[in-house]
Length: 161
Image 1 (cartoon, rainbow, N blue to C red):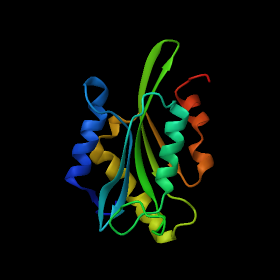
Image 2: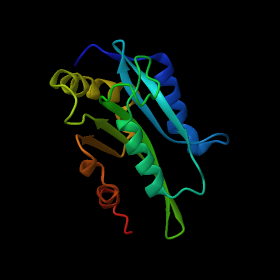
Image 3: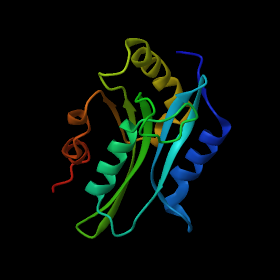
Image 4: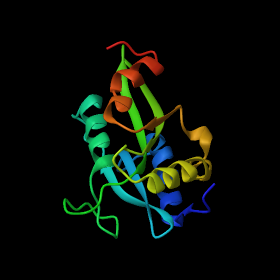
């Protein structure tokens, strides 16, 4: 436990995110969070694109976890790459049925400092608990893109593709 907590905005946005499939309005594919100034903050929310397949949504999510950000958490190609957390709404149709599962990802790539990886790891469990651990059907700890292969997700949810 690191003593780092999520901002109120991050908690409120996540609560809205997890309830989005039961209400009308804007839906999001994912939210990316990072540790900035000793707090977990939202750095990206991606609106769901209805005609985009789940594989493309997942790929976009994975790239967003690794995208460099500036000191305020805004995407910036000249910024620093670091770890991140992500919540993904895995919603797809299988044999005419809609399946919706929540996924929590801890992203701590091998090219970030040991100190940063330790901080990400130490904060992950408490952050997930703040969000409500029961909200997630699957938790992924990833240090490289192989750990984020969508086939692992299909296998976990017993979906044939």
